[in-house]
Length: 206
Image (tube, rainbow, N blue to C red; front, side, top):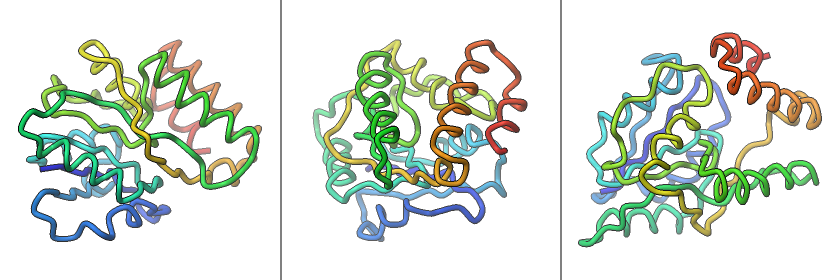
């Protein structure tokens, strides 16, 4: 079985629903939604979803990302294989808006951060064999996907599967592409300097 876990937010763009419309009532798949009413921090929602799951392969599906049907079918095949490969990784990132800077951000995320650095962000839709999970994510407000990647890459480097994960560019549209890109770099620097995650999250929310 494949377990799909979505840490949903209240009133957000729900692109994940497009991914799942063809997978209702499947015996080889379960869909687990964990909302903010159960846990405010996304890391906690992912922990809750993992412990509810029964599948041998887990997919952490970003709520503002859409996957093609073929991507999910591919993971179902892996989860049901008698000799299942122990892999983890994500899908090819692409924004739903066209702009040269957004294309560069996706390129960097796919081929530098993921392939070279072994860091997979949640908007790639992170999948993994449940044997990779050694301990719960800490209760940080941001960068829980980085924490997860650091844990997993100690065992195996991530793979990039050849299906598009189409992610909403709503924050770039709302704040301006250059300004949002700058904010993202400030957040990464703050994470590297180990600034309080609550402070970084307040900056992110602005």
